Image (tube, rainbow, N blue to C red; front, side, top):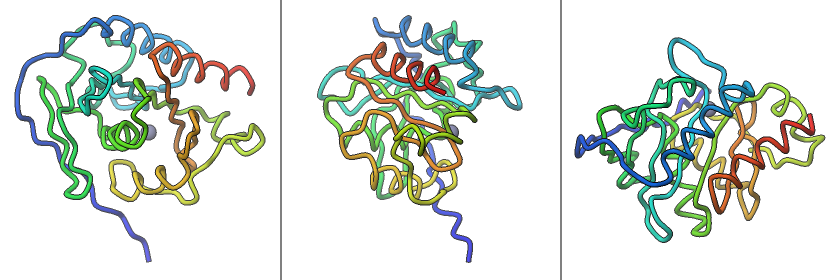
Length: 193
Ligand SMILES: [Zn+2]
């Protein structure tokens, strides 16, 4: 039996393009991810999505838009504010000119579970995926399709207080108390490979 999982849907509740003092730093890390091959492009989109919490204690975060190539992240309209995520109903409420990344709900689940986390970076790296176990990286127990409640549950099963986890046969999540921390953890693991 193959269980495809419930895909999240997006409800756009506003069209304002995000403005935030951390946005320039997020763009910087988008470019680093692109240059280091941590977000290989596909079909005009990108296998990577980066976000930061709007302010400590808030459930809102700013994330790369769906199908945005991280190499083209210079405009603010490549980013979306996620206002709220209903994990039970599978609804992402967003504000912006584009849809948020299809993996926004994983970011939301991490922010909900780990109040100290201020940035979540998700990338895909074949080498890290293959060597995760050797490197002592926690790996989700089962594969789950992207954009599903199931994937969120698999991540929460192994997250604990780790700041770097691998989604089985998919990609990694790096968590930081700042954008630089999330970015530097990603680079550290890349360098270990
Ligand atoms: Zn992914």
